[in-house]
Amino acid sequence: MRKIFKKSIAYALAASFLLNTSMCTFAKNSTAISTINTTTVSPPPPPSTDDILIDGFIKKPLDIISMLLGTGVFIVTLPFSALGGDTNEVSKTLIEKPAKSAFERCLGCLPPAKTELIQLD
Image (cartoon, rainbow, N blue to C red; front, side, top):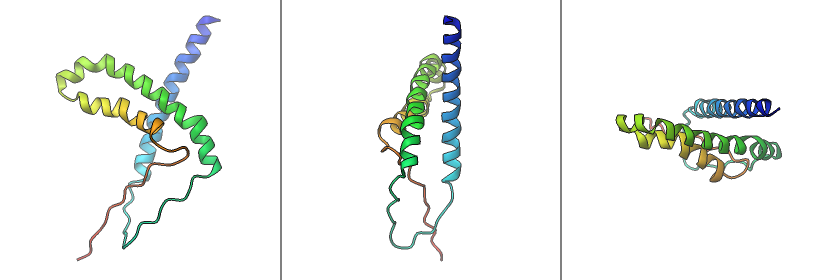
């Protein structure tokens, strides 16, 4: 019974880590569309009830689990990243991004879309 519980926890953590990274890449790819903005930027619409429920019960817990797993991976790979000189980038990717997504983002709010202003000559 104990082995089954440990295996199920390990599989759940691995699945949440993979799910979180795939959600991040999907969000990055879906917000990469350039838009032309003329004068004002309208505020984003308030989150719907579905967005709040999905965020509160699925996304935020996955972000916390991803942050904890990322901390473990960061500690394990710290000697190698220190040799490469990119410990700041690794810590931002594995720890800071999931932590900001879990604790700084409002419930149900999506990250703001990146927009580029295009100047026509």
